[in-house]
Image 1 (cartoon, rainbow, N blue to C red):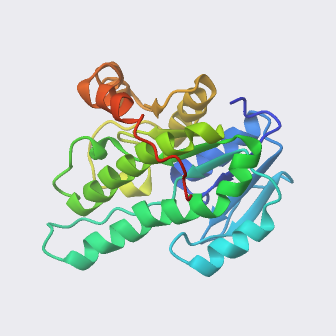
Image 2 (image 1 turned 90 degrees about the vertical axis):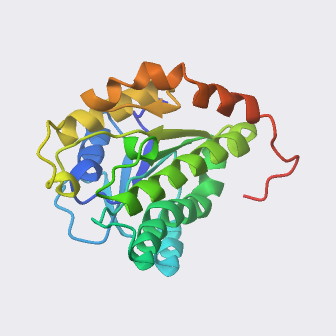
Image 3 (image 1 turned 180 degrees about the horizontal axis):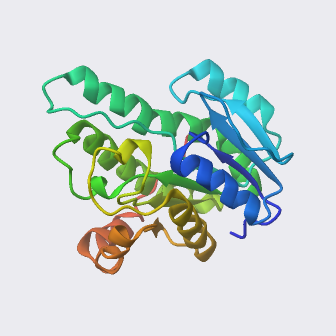
Length: 240
């Protein structure tokens, strides 16, 4: 998947990794970047089309579909992370609404365009999908669910020529990670690595030094082997 002359939609594009992804797509020669956002967007480039898109708002998702004529790459980047201790079920539900169902609903809405272009879906998951971070357990639960969704979509859409990729992000210097006093990659570094991984066809993309340190173990591990083994159990008809 070469990004040059492609059309890309990025959710959560107004800051952090999302904003860096939009700029990196432009740098690589994208024809059009649809920037899904709930706030102001400060990228001045005629190839960028701001799209009002709260991924938990069905009406906004439908309107966004109406603004996009063609699509090659969908990057589900929008997400939330709230400190919690599993004592408030509503906080877990809030994480799931954005980090799981938001990505799934946006994907389903844009799937006809992606099937037409035989494009790619890229879900910004997290390394916490592999091992929960106890200070954000609700976030960790939602990201583990998002990884499982990504694997399911990958199997279900393989016959349609749509590839599905998971970004297993480690510490990146964004607002979401401000409370962690640890080494962090810059959003620009992560964005470049994400597109590098997409262009190489990596099913899992490890876009920062911490996540890259576990990449080989994941790719050669039992969980990845099991995913390949069970991927054959795909229904004859897929309703997506």
